[in-house]
Image 1 (tube, rainbow, N blue to C red):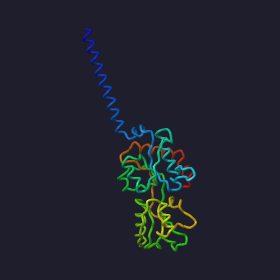
Image 2 (image 1 turned 90 degrees about the horizontal axis):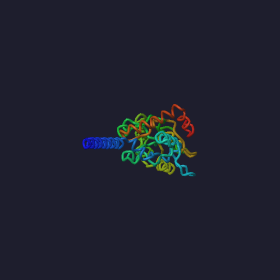
Image 3 (image 1 turned 30 degrees about the vertical axis):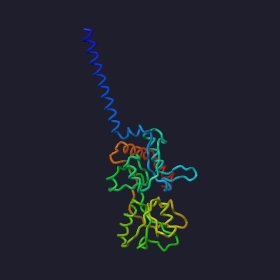
Image 4 (image 1 turned 135 degrees about the horizontal axis):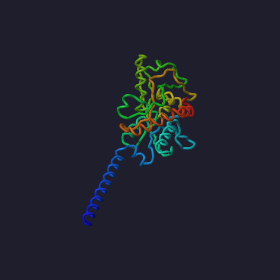
Length: 267
């Protein structure tokens, strides 16, 4: 009887041990397949942001800190996920680098004046729209250009991989004119090109362009192609996207989103 009982106990113990092992294995597999669980294990949110766009993402020359509306939004997402807005690491991106850095997994999230388009939705998943803008054009104040049509045959400075060129081409076709382009990696480079006369105009979204407006320049009245800004995550990262949208929804309902827009001079 004792031998039989001992065998039964030993057998039950083995079954229990195997069950626990299977449960742990399944749990580990689920965690490895869950992007949000991986993110929480990492302990911080890796975010791509602009550092050359006043009001959205700009490095404060006095403090060395990156500041702006989208910086505050990203911090709110970090707080939503980790309970700490400082559980975040920012990486400077441009229109050309932000997508590839998401694709490789170096970034979890991009909050970088990223215009949502149907074409881009094929590559990345986008959050709820949080800002709407339109493409504008800056020229030197002493230039003869007062209307878009006057730029026929002229060279426009635009950012690499941005939607600006496509938007202007549509406007040019409607106006019956043709444009030339010079593409640059950063907005400061385009502004320098305008100041030095290497391009006839500088074009990007109005809110971005307004941050580079000086007494020596002026903005044309025309606007082109509505630009909807959203944060982007890697295609299929639904868990993180839900957290981002949940954050935007909370900020919108509480009125904090409007307060941030006012804080950064965007409303």
